[in-house]
Image 1 (cartoon, rainbow, N blue to C red):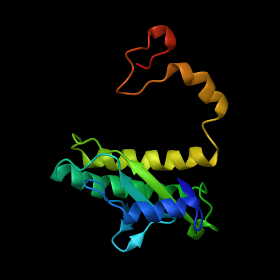
Image 2: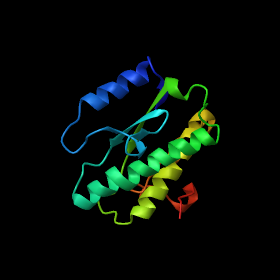
Image 3: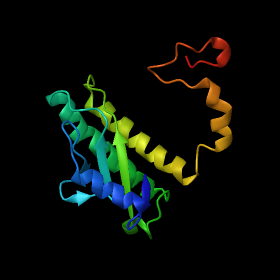
Length: 154
């Protein structure tokens, strides 16, 4: 969620930061220690930290990837540099507890963050696309009900 400071996104940002729970500790994304990305970005992990490696990948590679993706979106003009200081962003990130490759975790989070901000700037997906796809819902954990005639992804 990207929104103006002083609005509902900032309220959600501050609330999430102030209310950590076991396995889920929201934190500010930084490009390096003491250099927070702009707009101020709150990283909220969706998967509870499962082990030391999972924690390192979440707090390290995934967080750095998100920070770089936000900076990419600003550099590409997706987020206006004139108002970047007036905005705040919340990202909800899932890192697979079985992940082991920090380079992939970094790259995927960088790309996903930049793509999500770009899609949001374009107001995508359109309601037309959502309505067309409503009967073909699937995800990596749920696709059994789809048949080839429904255009199941390969």
